[in-house]
Image (cartoon, rainbow over all chains, first blue to last red; front, side):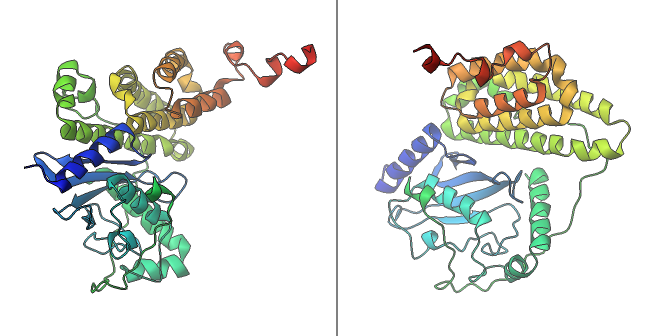
Length: 152
Length: 202
């Protein structure tokens, strides 16, 4: 069945294939256009460098009028990422707009890695550490980078 | 793309979630870096994209093809990280030279096969391959000299084929930094001083 949501997702996928933003990649799971797997590579010259972080994006038929549910599968340590991998990001909530596509979502999340908002914590330990002990915070980030190497 | 220029802001104002601390254990790489295993079958992510038969069937399934490209890119990122630790290892391990040579003997054939494949059309895969090679060049230094002719050949070919991929220019600059001083390769690298000044001829 071809619905507006599915047509839009097919367009998002083709666009992502033809012109993928640096450091992100994503595709629907087999036989299910509504559920995607994605990978975000940690930005260069940051503590996240070298990390390969997996995510899932669950869409509904309300897309693009409603955002997908996005969640990290990889273990993360970040002020705005919950223990269960869900992400506290405005464009995935009240600031969502139908003009965003999958590439925009993933790029925004990639940017969030290095530009957290400690005032709106999803992980209080990470938020406190980011503000008060940057050295330790960076060390913890590098730990999860190493974990992302072996997690499959 | 609007999303790529907008500053992403995190906000939990409307969220009913209660944040809980994430606890992660500390892990360090061993002092002696593990050698990567050689490809054992055509299903290995780093090899399957360049197997013609598998390649054809994968391209007919875009979702699977993307997943394989992801796996290949991730593998190359990991190799890059292994090479980034070599300078640390060299400071403490007498056998570091042997380690470097072993890594290169395994790594380069895989990479060469990738560079020769049509899948380098994918920007992410090209970037991952070039970054891994960049660190291999930097960390292995003189050990890389014997591979240099092949590397330069592939970089030139792929730059012509995929001109939108700037990663080939970046790695070319790194090769120049590392080997431009060698008499053997000096003539290959033209500096701005060697370029005739057009204004002076007018």
